[in-house]
Image 1 (tube, helix red, strand yellow):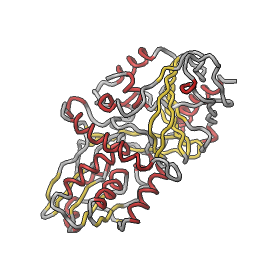
Image 2: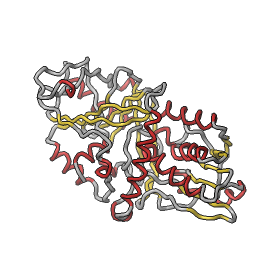
Image 3: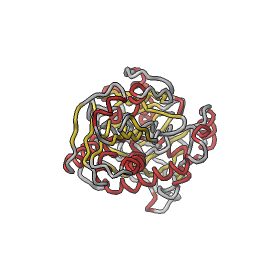
Image 4: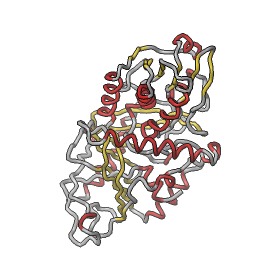
Length: 387
């Protein structure tokens, strides 16, 4: 697993403190690659306006995409994407819908209204089916709405051993399909999907930082970003004079991010404008699916652990502290195990101390104010170094 891949997973988001900072003129970079002045993130604990917790549905073998028959009802599964749900949704949905449409049904039922449910429903519509989404809550209340919003297609997607060497091929197919589809959502009002610069900061050389990060992963989480290295710009090491931060080592990359509230509204509107129906309904056993008389795509995410008694799903807890939005902050950072993403609906501040094992097997959805304050405090201290 390469250092570039690991940094891409982190999303290396960066912020500045105090006031806008202009890099010194002697940068060693050509003009087009010099960092612009960066507006600071106002990282203060009294600017935290919300704290949310999400449980990512991790499966060691990767997402479940098989089919089964309950009575006369075909069920296509599409769940268990760990921290890659939004990133892989279009590619995974394409695979699920192809299986669901194999017998050319006129109607499709999608269970769940999160990232995987909405995209699967829209893809089924495009394939010619009349689609009804059945859900107990809309996407704004679903766990998907509490995601970070970064392009992280192999974040806790599988364990290398249990998934096997063939999984990389499937993952690449999903990632490339999703990446291509997101092109359709760039430049729309509200910026549901956009590119942003991200900065990874370190107090020690990156090679040493990488070794420490690798040592944390005692389970062997799969890393597949090398398979799509041609899709995104390679990270740049910023030389002295081009480094706008008060730390010795900085890398800059550019990546996709999702402004999830805007993006979710866009998807819901697209689905409804195409004639889609939404019925609020909660299912308690898989046998209830047979009442629908439709081909079913099961996109219940972490809920599948209880609904399908699927103990292969492991919860991975993640908490976000939300700082008030700052439209002028158009970048993100990663520093001392804290990641920030500046979105239109707020600035995400998240601790990922412990690496991929943070939150593993933790199903506690209670928010921790202490964790939120500590995460924001790290970023606040970083900014305090800039005069």
